Image (cartoon, rainbow, N blue to C red; front, side):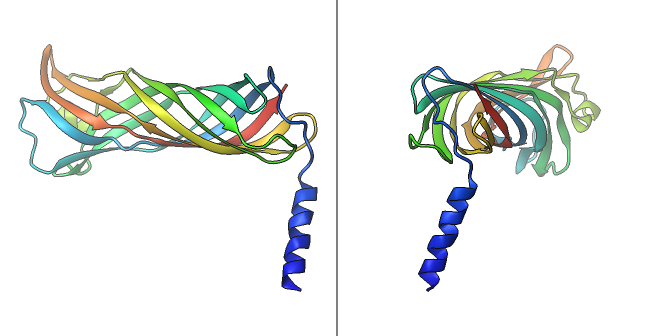
Length: 223
């Protein structure tokens, strides 16, 4: 009896999801998303140290929630390429021996990303997918944090970096006209070099593990 009820419940859920024509080669999908960005920011290596960092010094970048858009083109019925657009801003603070110290302020990142995606199934209904592709992080207008400024830093620079993004998600149809609710998660593998300057002189250079989780939800419109 329990098995019968479960089967009926599964059938009801299936019938409740509106049918939608499967994506075809040449289709374009546009997504409006709210995106949670959770970078790591940990120091992987100290390349140059003229100030004498205390033993046990570590760093962490803060999280952020930002609007993003994605544009996707289907090169085949189940295969698409997707790019995203957005800017996310982060501060970097000390951990360990420098716990709470403000080291980097307002680092704006443009995560230029292109993924090749495979969408499972060819029929109508819920469409999970996986993807992978290159990403290039562009850092804009970053500044030394309050603690770094108090210690004499006058400029801070993060190096732009090439990495890779791994992606998984699902599109859930809302109607038969191409509207869907979409959920997406990306894991980036990315390294960046941070430099601090006092006047023209470089005083500290560290290599960082950026590696953010980027989780999005929103609406998708397929044409």
